[in-house]
Image (cartoon, rainbow, N blue to C red):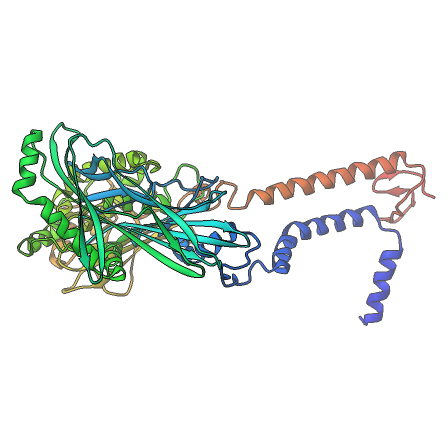
Length: 639
């Protein structure tokens, strides 16, 4: 058909009268286009899929402190997307994860707030409160407005950062606080404050630190240490605190003495550091015994030595050595696909819980203070995996273990539950390796994984494998690490991929029942189907002993072994889309109902026009031969 013919046909369509059915059809087509194609076209026209522009410098910001905060957060975008960090606003906003900004290393802990005391160990957790408040705040002198503020807890780095922006006309003075409990120097708490002044005028900030607060019987003295050409004044506080079980600990705190204010010249950056060293005795039966042990162990001199080492260390190296240990701890881990169903555990809660529980455990394999003669003992604890965890109920089903972490009390209660559970479930030897062992034990518990008699068994039931899981770098006990990946395909059936990151010998695996020939494992993923047995057995076995697997199948007495059926479509839709409507969004069904309603309105209007219309506005067309008055099965008079 020529272009001229198409144009003429279109003109006749526009100029002529349109039948009611054709009008209805055009309305339906137009509605579908607007509902489904329109939003995508609008996003494309607005360029929402274009790359994010580079952050602008902190000058001439039309939005003042808000723009300053947005620029500062660009550096955290990647780790926030990976759930390696969590962001909250001050004051809180709807949708924020209100996890307490908390740092700890198993020996000492601190919350990033002015009224936070130092926390020391008492039994399983750091719940002994020491009435010394070391947190330093920098407040802009003469500020008429509160600063915009956000807090970022960096799980993988073991660091808490507070970002503040004070309005300064069309610019913003920004303050960055950084807190961490050092992993290689367990007695050291580090605070760093950086103030950047983009204006031409000098600005003064008042430094506030509460220090000793109602510590009965505490002795205070002041001194200083010289490093290079700088003198670093500090305060020494010695006293006794009472633990939850009515025991007594002698405690020594050495903390930097901060000046009353700091001046930041125009277009310049100033950094202030506050170091706090903490040491304490073992629990004693009385106050006198605790004070006597303070003297016998010369804890004051030892604590000053830790403070001096922190002062003399290069700040960047001090931070990097701390971060390096935390990142080693996170080389193992657990990941889970995000679910939109109600009351489920997702990756953000899991990472937060792992971080807070590991903050209650020391890392003797990485600490400078660890006695070298005891290192083999700690390594042996990590490699002794027998009997941990070994419960058919994986911990993802225990909602008490995943409670909100809004306060230090929440953190201590959750960590105590976890450590007590792992200890009672056969992981006590592994916990002796410190934070490394805590991470391994928690991962095992999440998958009902168990090391038993020379093999690792994966105990989750097939019905629970309805989400994607990754158990990353499970320590097999001899330096070999195993990664298990559970994936659910489009047909809603799960399978397991097994990978070894390195191995000093051959390893083999078999699926549920172990009736098939064992498969050799390697650095490339090896796939196993998820099978359902009667009676239920673990879905996977891994060992380095081929003969062990060959004999194991004779000890697993099963009546029937079949490939596990596909998961229910409604269950999968609930996790993937937040509802069980066949995987289609609620917006689709609302659109369908609207179109059905529009169709019935047109149908009612058509019937009314045919029966009651005095003058027809639409010209109808005959659909069969015969009298033109017989149209659509209705007898009407046509002009």
